[in-house]
Image 1 (cartoon, rainbow, N blue to C red):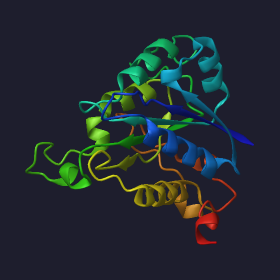
Image 2 (image 1 turned 180 degrees about the vertical axis):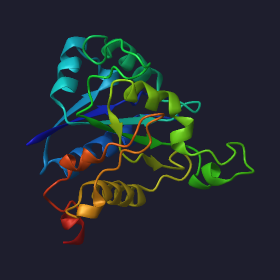
Image 3 (image 1 turned 60 degrees about the vertical axis):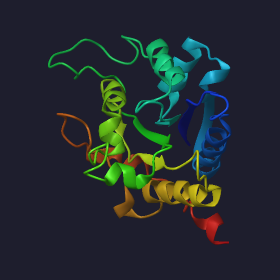
Image 4 (image 1 turned 30 degrees about the vertical axis):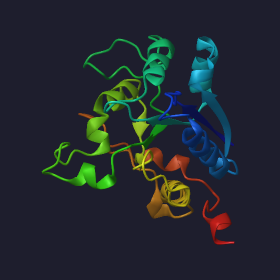
Length: 219
Protein backbone atom coordinates (compact mmCIF):
# COMPACT_ATOMS: atom_id res chain seq x y z
CA UNK A 1 0.00 0.00 0.00
CA UNK A 2 1.27 3.44 -0.88
CA UNK A 3 1.98 6.05 1.78
CA UNK A 4 0.56 9.54 2.24
CA UNK A 5 2.04 12.20 4.49
CA UNK A 6 -0.36 14.97 5.56
CA UNK A 7 1.28 18.09 6.96
CA UNK A 8 -0.98 20.37 8.97
CA UNK A 9 0.57 23.82 8.76
CA UNK A 10 -2.05 25.53 10.89
CA UNK A 11 -1.13 27.75 13.82
CA UNK A 12 -3.29 29.32 16.50
CA UNK A 13 -3.81 33.05 16.08
CA UNK A 14 -6.38 34.03 18.65
CA UNK A 15 -9.05 35.20 18.50
CA UNK A 16 -9.49 34.72 14.74
CA UNK A 17 -7.83 31.35 14.23
CA UNK A 18 -7.96 28.45 16.66
CA UNK A 19 -6.86 25.74 14.22
CA UNK A 20 -10.08 23.74 14.52
CA UNK A 21 -10.94 23.87 10.83
CA UNK A 22 -7.44 22.81 9.82
CA UNK A 23 -7.65 19.88 12.22
CA UNK A 24 -11.01 18.89 10.74
CA UNK A 25 -9.82 19.16 7.13
CA UNK A 26 -6.60 17.21 7.64
CA UNK A 27 -8.43 14.43 9.49
CA UNK A 28 -11.13 14.33 6.82
CA UNK A 29 -8.47 13.95 4.12
CA UNK A 30 -6.83 11.20 6.16
CA UNK A 31 -10.16 9.41 6.52
CA UNK A 32 -10.91 9.59 2.81
CA UNK A 33 -7.47 8.29 1.85
CA UNK A 34 -7.31 5.69 4.60
CA UNK A 35 -8.58 2.78 2.51
CA UNK A 36 -5.94 3.30 -0.15
CA UNK A 37 -2.93 4.75 1.65
CA UNK A 38 -1.05 4.29 4.86
CA UNK A 39 -1.51 7.80 6.22
CA UNK A 40 0.63 9.72 8.69
CA UNK A 41 -0.04 13.25 9.92
CA UNK A 42 2.35 15.90 11.19
CA UNK A 43 0.82 18.80 13.12
CA UNK A 44 3.63 21.30 12.64
CA UNK A 45 2.61 23.65 15.46
CA UNK A 46 2.92 20.79 17.97
CA UNK A 47 6.60 20.34 17.15
CA UNK A 48 8.49 17.80 15.08
CA UNK A 49 11.73 15.89 14.82
CA UNK A 50 13.60 17.12 11.75
CA UNK A 51 15.27 13.82 10.90
CA UNK A 52 12.01 11.99 11.54
CA UNK A 53 10.19 14.28 9.10
CA UNK A 54 12.83 13.73 6.45
CA UNK A 55 12.32 9.99 6.76
CA UNK A 56 8.56 10.49 6.37
CA UNK A 57 9.20 12.31 3.10
CA UNK A 58 11.51 9.58 1.89
CA UNK A 59 8.88 6.94 2.64
CA UNK A 60 5.86 8.83 1.27
CA UNK A 61 4.39 8.60 -2.22
CA UNK A 62 2.17 11.66 -1.86
CA UNK A 63 2.61 14.73 0.34
CA UNK A 64 -0.45 16.79 1.26
CA UNK A 65 0.07 20.20 2.82
CA UNK A 66 -2.73 22.02 4.55
CA UNK A 67 -2.24 25.68 5.38
CA UNK A 68 -4.36 28.70 6.19
CA UNK A 69 -3.43 31.64 4.01
CA UNK A 70 -1.78 34.44 6.00
CA UNK A 71 -0.95 37.59 4.07
CA UNK A 72 -1.14 35.75 0.74
CA UNK A 73 1.33 33.10 1.82
CA UNK A 74 1.53 29.84 3.71
CA UNK A 75 1.65 29.98 7.49
CA UNK A 76 4.90 30.98 9.19
CA UNK A 77 5.17 27.62 10.94
CA UNK A 78 4.87 25.77 7.62
CA UNK A 79 7.52 27.98 6.03
CA UNK A 80 9.86 27.27 8.96
CA UNK A 81 9.09 23.56 8.65
CA UNK A 82 10.19 23.63 5.01
CA UNK A 83 13.34 25.56 5.96
CA UNK A 84 14.14 22.99 8.64
CA UNK A 85 13.28 19.77 6.81
CA UNK A 86 14.23 20.29 3.16
CA UNK A 87 17.92 19.42 2.97
CA UNK A 88 20.51 19.13 0.23
CA UNK A 89 21.63 15.57 -0.41
CA UNK A 90 18.26 14.29 0.81
CA UNK A 91 15.72 16.32 -1.16
CA UNK A 92 17.95 17.63 -3.96
CA UNK A 93 21.48 17.89 -5.27
CA UNK A 94 23.20 20.67 -7.15
CA UNK A 95 22.84 20.11 -10.87
CA UNK A 96 22.65 22.09 -14.11
CA UNK A 97 20.40 23.33 -15.50
CA UNK A 98 19.26 25.06 -12.33
CA UNK A 99 16.36 23.28 -10.63
CA UNK A 100 16.95 19.89 -12.23
CA UNK A 101 18.55 18.20 -9.21
CA UNK A 102 15.42 17.16 -7.35
CA UNK A 103 15.60 13.67 -5.84
CA UNK A 104 11.86 13.21 -5.27
CA UNK A 105 10.77 12.70 -8.87
CA UNK A 106 8.77 9.64 -7.80
CA UNK A 107 6.50 11.73 -5.53
CA UNK A 108 3.57 14.10 -5.96
CA UNK A 109 2.25 16.80 -3.66
CA UNK A 110 -1.04 18.60 -3.10
CA UNK A 111 -1.75 21.91 -1.38
CA UNK A 112 -4.94 22.37 0.65
CA UNK A 113 -5.71 25.94 1.66
CA UNK A 114 -8.22 27.95 3.67
CA UNK A 115 -8.91 31.60 2.89
CA UNK A 116 -10.80 34.46 4.47
CA UNK A 117 -11.23 35.73 0.91
CA UNK A 118 -14.19 34.51 -1.08
CA UNK A 119 -13.62 32.45 -4.21
CA UNK A 120 -15.03 35.33 -6.25
CA UNK A 121 -12.24 37.56 -4.92
CA UNK A 122 -9.70 35.38 -6.72
CA UNK A 123 -11.60 35.28 -10.01
CA UNK A 124 -12.35 39.02 -10.15
CA UNK A 125 -9.93 40.44 -12.71
CA UNK A 126 -10.80 43.96 -11.61
CA UNK A 127 -10.45 43.27 -7.88
CA UNK A 128 -7.48 43.54 -5.55
CA UNK A 129 -6.01 40.19 -6.59
CA UNK A 130 -6.35 40.95 -10.29
CA UNK A 131 -7.82 37.57 -11.16
CA UNK A 132 -4.82 35.66 -9.84
CA UNK A 133 -5.40 32.02 -8.99
CA UNK A 134 -4.45 30.40 -5.70
CA UNK A 135 -1.57 28.66 -7.47
CA UNK A 136 -0.25 31.93 -8.84
CA UNK A 137 -0.36 33.48 -5.38
CA UNK A 138 1.43 30.44 -3.93
CA UNK A 139 4.04 30.21 -6.68
CA UNK A 140 7.06 30.39 -4.30
CA UNK A 141 5.72 27.43 -2.29
CA UNK A 142 5.15 25.47 -5.49
CA UNK A 143 8.68 26.21 -6.64
CA UNK A 144 10.13 25.03 -3.32
CA UNK A 145 8.41 21.68 -3.73
CA UNK A 146 9.14 21.34 -7.42
CA UNK A 147 12.81 22.06 -6.77
CA UNK A 148 12.86 18.69 -4.98
CA UNK A 149 11.45 17.01 -8.08
CA UNK A 150 7.92 16.52 -6.77
CA UNK A 151 5.02 17.03 -9.16
CA UNK A 152 1.91 19.02 -8.18
CA UNK A 153 -1.64 17.78 -8.01
CA UNK A 154 -4.62 20.13 -8.25
CA UNK A 155 -4.79 22.59 -5.35
CA UNK A 156 -7.76 22.56 -2.96
CA UNK A 157 -9.07 25.93 -1.74
CA UNK A 158 -11.77 26.56 0.86
CA UNK A 159 -13.01 30.13 1.12
CA UNK A 160 -14.78 32.61 3.42
CA UNK A 161 -13.74 30.54 6.43
CA UNK A 162 -13.72 33.36 9.00
CA UNK A 163 -16.98 35.22 8.47
CA UNK A 164 -19.15 32.56 6.80
CA UNK A 165 -17.77 29.09 7.52
CA UNK A 166 -19.81 26.24 6.05
CA UNK A 167 -18.61 22.84 7.23
CA UNK A 168 -21.10 20.91 5.10
CA UNK A 169 -19.91 22.71 1.98
CA UNK A 170 -16.26 22.24 2.93
CA UNK A 171 -16.75 18.51 3.54
CA UNK A 172 -18.32 18.08 0.12
CA UNK A 173 -15.61 20.11 -1.58
CA UNK A 174 -12.81 18.13 0.08
CA UNK A 175 -14.49 14.83 -0.82
CA UNK A 176 -15.19 15.85 -4.41
CA UNK A 177 -11.63 17.11 -4.80
CA UNK A 178 -10.14 13.82 -3.66
CA UNK A 179 -12.53 11.83 -5.83
CA UNK A 180 -11.46 13.88 -8.85
CA UNK A 181 -7.85 12.91 -8.18
CA UNK A 182 -8.13 9.34 -7.01
CA UNK A 183 -11.37 7.73 -8.20
CA UNK A 184 -11.43 4.56 -10.27
CA UNK A 185 -11.55 6.26 -13.63
CA UNK A 186 -8.61 6.15 -15.99
CA UNK A 187 -9.47 9.65 -17.13
CA UNK A 188 -9.26 10.97 -13.55
CA UNK A 189 -5.55 10.52 -13.15
CA UNK A 190 -3.68 13.02 -11.00
CA UNK A 191 -2.43 15.77 -13.26
CA UNK A 192 1.07 17.16 -12.89
CA UNK A 193 1.20 19.91 -15.46
CA UNK A 194 1.93 23.07 -13.48
CA UNK A 195 5.68 22.81 -13.08
CA UNK A 196 7.56 25.87 -14.22
CA UNK A 197 9.83 25.20 -17.17
CA UNK A 198 9.55 21.42 -16.84
CA UNK A 199 7.80 19.05 -19.22
CA UNK A 200 4.70 17.16 -18.14
CA UNK A 201 5.25 13.77 -16.55
CA UNK A 202 2.34 11.49 -17.53
CA UNK A 203 3.31 8.60 -15.24
CA UNK A 204 1.47 10.13 -12.26
CA UNK A 205 -1.23 7.51 -12.90
CA UNK A 206 0.65 5.20 -10.52
CA UNK A 207 -1.06 7.12 -7.71
CA UNK A 208 -4.55 6.17 -8.89
CA UNK A 209 -6.46 4.54 -6.05
CA UNK A 210 -8.43 1.33 -6.38
CA UNK A 211 -11.41 2.44 -4.32
CA UNK A 212 -14.12 4.98 -5.09
CA UNK A 213 -13.71 7.59 -2.36
CA UNK A 214 -17.26 8.78 -2.89
CA UNK A 215 -18.87 5.52 -1.88
CA UNK A 216 -19.44 6.53 1.74
CA UNK A 217 -20.94 9.85 0.76
CA UNK A 218 -23.59 8.16 -1.37
CA UNK A 219 -24.64 5.55 1.22
